[in-house]
Length: 190
Image (tube, rainbow, N blue to C red; front, side, top):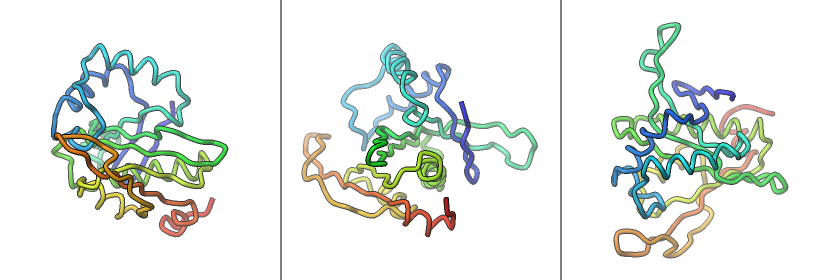
């Protein structure tokens, strides 16, 4: 499986050895606060999920976000901090839905998530030839909204009270970025 490299981040295919880490991340209420998860994931349920995920094309598989412990040495140690993926790739309309989780809270607010998104956007636009990449974000997820806007996503609309959590409904924003917008932002032409 290919690895995708960004500025200080590496995206690689999820492996069976990652599953205990995923269980730890997704068992943390702070990590899952804005995810549409209504139960804690067990290792057994992660195994079932993993087997199903392996049947998907690479373009829709979950990628592990890793950061280098020390980037100045020839063989840095890569540490997993989260996951990122295209949940759906529509090859007819050339759209993809992006999802990301930074599971290691020590790496929150340090721009690694933004860089992982940039790396996956490059892959989506320049390798998969997508025209539009979109995401859904809970209206109360201020950290996510800030990161997505910083990368270049634009608010398209709001799904009113589309998510239920903590005893009440929440609005969900749809944000997207188009290939011509990314071309301008990334200074790449493909």
